[in-house]
Image (tube, rainbow, N blue to C red):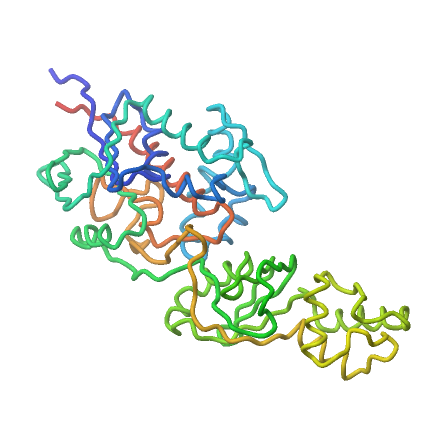
Length: 410
């Protein structure tokens, strides 16, 4: 007579998706083993949000939520209807991690420390009996009878099921190619624009809360906060634009014209505001005028760049000078000449073709009992906790699918 024996689950990758799977799988059904190639687990969780861990984003409508994913949005709709940010918040809060929603809707632990999230994931995984093995570089994965054989340099691990969630490592992608999966080539996403332009030279750290950034050649425009850095332009607006145009910008070798509207308003509106201020403050020096939401230094440098004396009174500003100011602030054309990685939160577009996945369970169509989650898939999002949310949701579906598998193992 057969007895109910624990099945073996091997999770390849000790990141967010891997640990969330291990935390939600039924430990009474499974012997769980996490294989991490580096010397430490949950490294992206640790550095996310400047070490505070941007757990998710307070967007609770799945149809709105998918709009933050340049790739994978259609497929994720069904995923998010089953597990979304409110579920993520509840999961962590039930495990003693108080969360907060900040003004920009990003979700963080109250402690402002990624350690709170890491400890909760570790504790939940360990409670399920998960074995966490680091410095285990997987060299090969193959099917042997009904089992999966996962080979490292010195060991073999046997699994009834495999969850593969290694992130975007090229070596990991080769393992998947060897298993016959169709792959979409990797290109960088979420990067800043390298720009040398007098308009922004010397203004590192200056931010614009409501800007518009456009790539005319690609017919794509994004609104949001903008930041000048020592290498060019960054901030949510640029990062979002880089994500949506990741493949096109890669093909163009990151050489493209960008149009910046520092004010984040239509030129006609800006003109009306400037002329209204001019008529009401004719005797005020333009350099001292606070007309738009700009720093005093940036405003004065803009005037000087256009040959306008900051000491000139508003009443003496000509219509031609008004148009020069508006050109500079609302239609500033710059040349992008390369990119830079955004902090340590490197994200790629590309990975396993989404046609390979059954999104009700995250099981692959080619191989039974082989699941994929996280950045290994051709799914990515803009900044703000969205990439983690995809990991939590996909891992949740995998755990539920595994928990429903109750066949006897002899």
